[in-house]
Image (tube, rainbow, N blue to C red):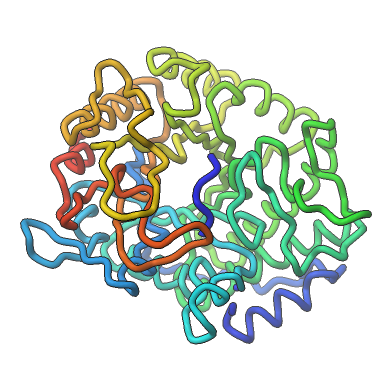
Length: 403
């Protein structure tokens, strides 16, 4: 999905990442695993996830979360409702955030901001999925921009090495703070591949629409190897997930990434499902597709992103993505109850189909003074699980169901 786009990576990490960008050193000599890994949350048998990547930014710019009109921590509120996993994105070096806010601001969706989100999650027992976009901004089917630091790369081996070292360096930074995630996502909505847009001349071609599965697979496997090396070094189990948008792409994409890309060392195939854009596979047909693919490929299937509006009204001047022209699914009106029933039904359907779970995309992106590249506030406040007053709604109770 093309969402509204929203590392000053602390100096040491930024310097390290850039210095690694053209390195051929694949960190072959790793320390031995620790004898006693930290006691951290583990992935639930059925994931009830929430992507809370924007919360730090919303709170920093005046957004207020409430429960029964009392100030509340959204991590704690959603955890108490039944959420068991936080998803959080990381961009390579989103210096454009400083162009919006100025040099003094935190670099949102950079390592320090991500560490803060993971710490808030782990403190209350939420497992974490870390979503690597491998871009300085949003990565989705239409936009897979090359990070600025890697634009001069012309060798596939050097690019693979850069992906490895960047991925490992971020995980190492988190490990040093006892904040390793329980799952890592290699790429975001990578239907066409990765780093396929705004590519300079000579940059390795990873566009799978053009048949470049071998090159794409080599880069993805480099990212996976970094996760596996950190897994071995830390002694902590870390699941690896891939991710595409739209269920209609699952069957051909899984076949090709495995058979043509030679990407096999992953546990989870994630996909985005938004009824606004993803209409080829009906809501009713989705469970059968999921169960068939799980049986065919022996991989877990996970709804990595979904959402549903509780209204078509807006609470600020930032236009909403789900607008009044968007028709609801017949049985789920755009009301708080309709939102709840959509999420409850989808979650139960996925559980019945043997899926690993469902993750809600940005349920806490309420309006505030936060800015991105397109506006101030939120283009998603009508899809949040908090109303226009900041109070958590009844819809969040779908998380309480034992699917």
